[in-house]
Image (cartoon, rainbow, N blue to C red; front, side, top):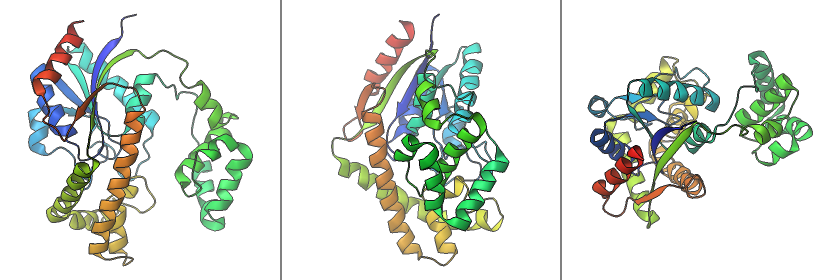
Length: 312
């Protein structure tokens, strides 16, 4: 069976993925499919560095700005939505160009990960959440260690969301998360991916970009955005959306737990740490063509690679 061709641009935050994706999409007639786990949320504009309205007018974007921040949205949901988007674009002869820094999303799509048998139980999840609030994260984590020590070894006890999900999988299916992880890539991927990975030879250049971006977010009104969303009940502490870098720190300011200057410094620190993890993920991941952002990006070189890939 002939595989569907897709192109992706990945890399750390503040590396210039959006600009490269828009430029490339215009050159090869593609549309952009976001693979960013926070840009999926409605209303979270400044802190997630979403493409601007002007940028979205230049090239059509998909899987962005469509999930309510109060709702749960999983990697499995993303894979389903991405597959449907690829099919729709393909039926219209349009090239899907993925762009984003959530490696788990794009890798799960490309690798053919099958989440179909790991169901959910909202009531059980709420029960576990209440258990953690009453007894503490360590007590919840002990439950996972007894049921699935392999998953526990890969999960921090304070990552309550992941601990609860692992327990929920066992509760619903009777099998551990580690079991499902071991069988989740049994089917061959239907996609042939050309990946561009943005990297940096000098990591300090990336850190400088991150600091400048964070300052720009604060100048654009990040505090006011979070305050408004929090006051309206759209952004609720404890949800995945409220854990986004830039939002969780401002919520602490609103709650009087820290100052705005301290939040600014913490957002920079947390973003730098996140960028380190992204670099590690993509360097050991699916491979691809590395593009160094601290050098001049050769658009003609990238376009030529894409054109040769699409006609091969």
